[in-house]
Amino acid sequence: MSSDPVLTVPAAPSAGDLRTEEMLLNMGPQHPATHGVLRVVVRTDGEIVLDCEPHVGYLHRCFEKHCESVTVLQSVLYTDRLDYLTAMGNNWGFCLAIEKLFGPELVVPERAQYMRVICQELNRIASHLLAIGTYGMDIGAITPFLYCFREREKILGIFEAICGQRLNYNYIRPGGVAYDWDDRMVGMIKDFCGYFRPKVAEYDDLLSENEIFVRRTADVGVLPLATAIQYGCTGPVLRGSGVPRDLRKDQPYGIYDRFTFDVVVGKGEKGTVGDCFDRYICRMREMEQSISIVEQAINALPGGEYRSAKIKGKIRPPKGEAYTRIENSRGEVGFYVVSDGKEVLYRLKCRSPSFHNISVIPEISRGSMVADLIAIIGSMDIVLGEVDR
Amino acid sequence: MNRQQLVDRIKAQFGDRVLEAVPDGLEPFVRVQAADWPALALFLRDQLGLDYLGCLTGIDRGKGQGLEAIYHLEKMDKDRLGIAVRIRVPYEAAEIPSVETVWRTADWHEREAWDLLGIRFTGHHNLVRILCAEDWEGHPLRKDYRSPDTYHGVKNNVV
Image 1 (tube, rainbow over the protein chains, first blue to last red):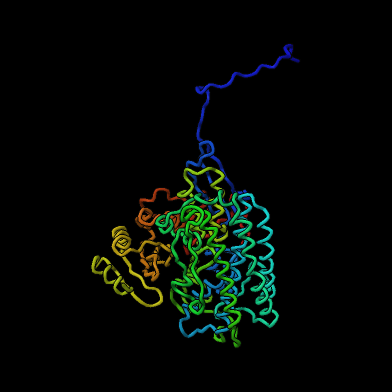
Image 2 (cartoon, rainbow over the protein chains, first blue to last red):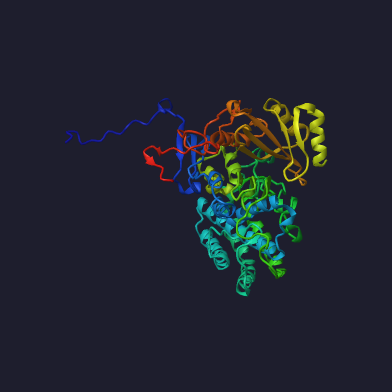
């Protein structure tokens, strides 16, 4: 018990008493705003980010090593788990590499080509929906997330119908696809096209025209084009910086040369070219292009075989090496395969877009506020599954 | 410019130092020695405009062959003209000059190749493991790699 009941009020600090120092902060690895298990060590001066360094590897599960011990067909299953939000694209990229080894003697049937395009574009929409929804949530807008998941659910329902899986499809296989579609599935996809078209306007109202969202993203995390190329950025991250580089146009794989669509680029609508808003709006506009591709493809879907008769049972790619890449939701996914003629590949290397997109984060976040760092990481739309492999 | 002309220009500049050049086929590439790589890298970027390092693959080619690094380079424009550069080094001197200052993205890729294959990139500012734990032993993608029996007391139950 104090004998003196009077509380002493500390004197107001003078400028000389204030001591400021830099602080090292660990963001993650378990943090909702890092979209997975990413650890970012941030050196801060008050609220300013002086420097930051992403540490990856928390999800490393020896994907490449595994694929040296399982067969080619079993490896397709592991590619699902790279970018688990766009598994169709990973399947396709890997299958393209195997098909390249087989050369012109392996012809993927027309029907399968159309099915692949439809699957990948639907998957791109699902992935962008998740990117946009969670991005809004990072910045404090919870409602768009629920709207986005409502539509994404429909796409996952379609995938569930065609291959029994909602996330890790293992559907596109060397030489074609795993299962054929019946009229019901084609009907589901056609219905979805009509359903989805007007929805993009809803997201625009909720986010693109939302004053708070625009202020949090415009002029934040500006990624200059030269820096983006230096760091190997691809996909919406590169296109957000204002250059129309899209493998679907530049080096059409599959049958992408048969469809009409535009490559969306960032124009600095609300701020500077290459800011967080541009990366976001690229994804938004790409969904419109994707649904148009799906419409064109589903209306032209031919009959016939859905997988090549040449691929039966065990797959033994001919001896050789091949590098292929495709335009996935997050950018270029590349597969370098080395086969020595056996059922099991000698070496498989995966080039993942998020690996590059993460590495540029320190470059564009120096000098920004800590809260903006969240906006920057969110705008990169990273999936740690493909970074850590 | 097409790929043949690209390879011709490399040959014209580097002559005998280009050990092997395959301008067509499944996987076009040129092979040089590790010592010539920094000069070639700058030539490719500044003279031929290959500004985009798409992928760096490390491979253990097996006994008698050594380790190999494959760089997939491209010009980031409509045509995406590109070439792969292969560099092979023996196990006992697995060293390749770093090109992280030529293409910034090489920084993380070289760390990955060091981590998984044990190729030492000389001149790299921070050549530490990137995917495996810091105290992991060995380089898992080497063909003679044996996984440890235990790691920090956790048993390896893989038969």
